[in-house]
Amino acid sequence: MEYDTWSPAYRAVLADFGYDPAGDERARDTLAGIAEPFDTDRLRALFEDRTVAVAGGAGALAGESELSLAREADVVVAASTAADVLAEAGVGVDLMVTDLDKNVGTARDLTRDGVPVAAHAHGDNVPAIREWVPRFDLGHTLPTTQAEPRGPVENFGGFTDGDRGAFLADHFGADRLDFPGWEFDDPSVGAEKRRKLVWAERLLHWLERRRDERFDVLDGRRGAIDTSWLPV
Image 1: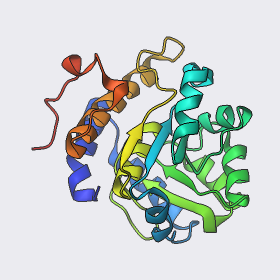
Image 2: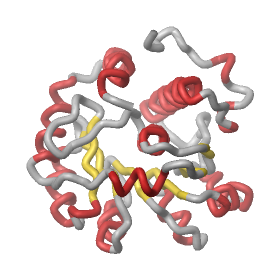
Image 3: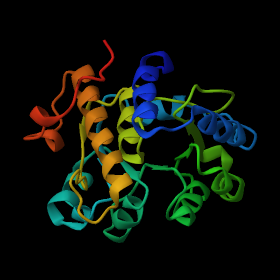
Image 4: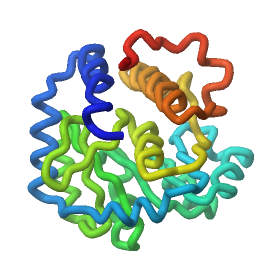
């Protein structure tokens, strides 16, 4: 997804949460000053025409049926702490998506092992960017933003770690997307995270419509998803 297509959704998210886009832009520029350009041809080769499991960080991921969905995929994208759950179960991760708020050591180690990590800049993680991104292997670090891209910092769409992983896989030609370890009604999360999960659900619904695909994770939920914000 290009930024011009993503930007109406971004504005809707900003309006709903009351976020100041200047914060995202400052974080983006901080990341741009540290990161290096990432070879996106590598991502095209990874994702194109393949089945991709975008693993979420809900507790359900540790269940055998969810792990099997990840094992059976051609490519595995891990949202944040999902990388650790998958590693413990012996499931390899091909890309990690993180906004640096948890298990940052895992992200650092993956880059040092040659596994790409999409490191995301947003309004309140500038300290984490400054502390952690210089410790990554920058050759395996994909810098991302939810604001307008600049310099080496890319934007392929998405808001939370999980749905950013889905938008990224879509952008680079994934044939099918599966979603192990997702729980939109996760009772263990706080109020703000619940609101973010609402947006993750909305954005995945938008993405499946654009792809003319039906994501199993949305079955039984589509009728209650607000689509009034959708770009025309």
